[in-house]
Length: 612
Image 1 (cartoon, rainbow, N blue to C red):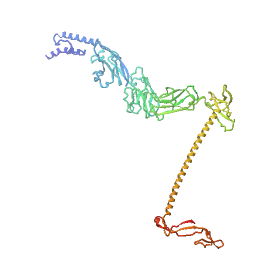
Image 2: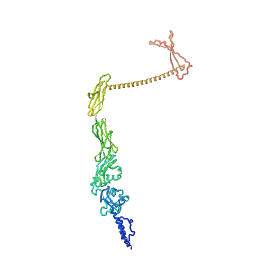
Image 3: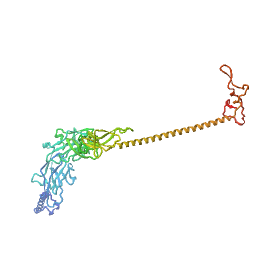
Image 4: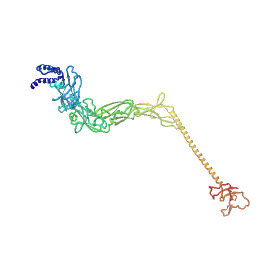
C-alpha cells in the first residue's frame, strides 16, 4: 500500500522540481487542489503549459559581456556588460556573482550586507545607460570568473547554456605570468639635491600597455624588507605615518607619475610602481631616486647688459635653480615700478630653473647704484644677488663756479671761472661762450680767466659721447655783490653778537665788585662799633694811660722830667727833641660813669698822643 502511494506521488514531486527550476512560484499559480488523481495527465498538461510559459519569459533575459579581460594586480578593472529584459520588467536590481561550483557568492549587490567580505567596498556598477550592467572592481588581486544576473535563477550562467560565455574571466597579472613586463616602464632621475625643509618634485614618466588604463599608482620607500608605501593614488592615507599629508601626485595624466614630497628633512630613496612586480626597482635593475639634503639654497644669477644708455629700455633676468616645480621660489626686485614676467623650465631631470625677467628703463640717477633680486624659497630661506648699474648719460647739472676771490683795492684783477658737471662717460669737452643775442665763443677748456667787475655774462657747455648740455647764464658782478653783501651781513651779525657778550661780562664784573664793597663796608662799621665800646669800658688802677703832652718850649727852663736823654756819635749826652719830649702821667678815671668791664683783659695798656 505504501509503495503504491509513493509511486503515485513521484510525478507530483517531479513537476514541482521542474517548476522550481523554471523560477515559478507554485503558491501563486492557479492550479487544481488535487494534483494526484487517476486523471493526472490533465493536471500535468496544465502545469506543463504554465512551465513552458515561464521558460519563454526567462529567455527574454540576456546578458552580454566579453569572455575575458586582463588586469594588472592592484589595479582597477571595468567589466563591460549590457542586458535585455522582458517588456515592462519593473525595477531591475543587478547582482554580480563570483563563479563557484557549489554556491552563489555575491561580489556586488545594492544590499552590501550580502556581499562577501573580500569584495565589500571594492565593487560598484557603472550606471551609464538604462541597460548597462558594467562592473568596476578596484584593487584586483587575483584571477577569477564573474557573471551578472538578477537572481539565482535568472543570471548569465544559468541562461547561457548553449555557448561558453557563461561568465567573464578576469586575468590578473603581475606581468611576470604573461611576459608583458616589456610594456611597462618608469623613467626617474638617479638623484636630486633637496633644500632642507623645502619641497621636491620627483619627475616620473610611465609607459604602460594600451589595454591597461585603470591601475593604482604607488610610490615606495626603498628598504631591505617589504614594500612600504609613501604614496597611494587610491588611498592617500594608506601610507607610512611620517609621510601622511606630505606626499601627492603632481601629474594629471596617466603617463605622468611625478611625486611631490613636502618638508623634506632627511635623505631618502624612493621609487614608483603598480604593485610588487611592476615597479622601477624590479623592472630596471634596482633603479631608485636618491634624495640628498643641502642646508643653503643656491644663489640667484643676474644676466643683463654691462652698459646701459639712459632712457633706452633693457631686459634683465634673475634666475635661480630649485627642486620643487609645483612651488617654485618667489623672486622680487629692489627697484619699484618694474614690468615683471616669470617663466620656468626643467633643464635637468629633477632640477628646475625659475626666471624673473624685468623691463628696465635706465635713468642717470641710478648710475652706480645696485640692482638686486631676492629669491625666497618654500622653507622661507632667502638668497640675494646684485649688480652695479653702469648707465651712460649726457652731462647733467652743468654749473659755473669762481675759484679765486678779489681783495678790496685790487681793482680790475682777473678771476678764474670753472665749469663743472656730472656725466658718464666723463666730459670730453667744455666750451665757454659770452652770452648775448648771439653766443660768442670764448674758449674750449675747463677754466677761463675774466676781469673783476666785468659786465659780461658767460655760458659753458659740457659734452661727451652721449650729448651736450648747457649751463645757466653766469653774471660775475651780480654774484660778487651778492657775496659782498653776505659777507657784510655776517660781519654785522658777528660784531653785534660780540659786543653784546662783552657788555654782559662787564655788567657781571661790576655787580660782583659792588657786592664785595658793600660787604666790606658793613664789616668795617661793625669793627668800629666794637672799638668804641671797648674804649668806653671802665679802666682800673692797674690800667695806665700814657699821654704825650706837647707844649711850647720855655726859655731857660730846666730839663723836663722824664725827658729822653741820649748820646751822640761822640759819646756826648744830647737831649733829643726837647720840644717834643714825652711827658708821662697817670690818669685815674672815675668808675662812676662806666660799668665794670666784662670782657676786657687786665694789664692791657693803651697809648695816646696829646698835642698841647
